[in-house]
Length: 119
Image (cartoon, rainbow, N blue to C red; front, top):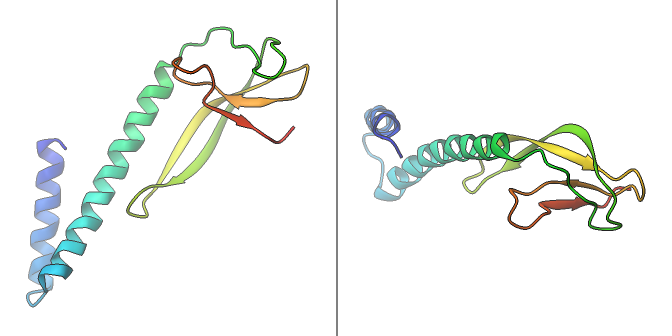
């Protein structure tokens, strides 16, 4: 976590403590965790966006039949993270004109990020 985000959390917790002067240790811990989960989700969302922006746009082949895949645009998805935070993800989606498979490309390490079973 960078210094600015840490300061924001510290400031928010200071305000929370002023509003809850009799809070127990467990209540303080929960309040802190909520704020840290928010920061964590924002960092995670930024990292995912950076990774997706860096994916190569080379020719991918269908894992089912080997045909050249077509770019079907980007798909948005909401993910719930640890700490019950929601982040938006947008990824490139590919389809196979031969067998109808659809998938999201990986970062290049495995070749496939996920295969869609809706054919």
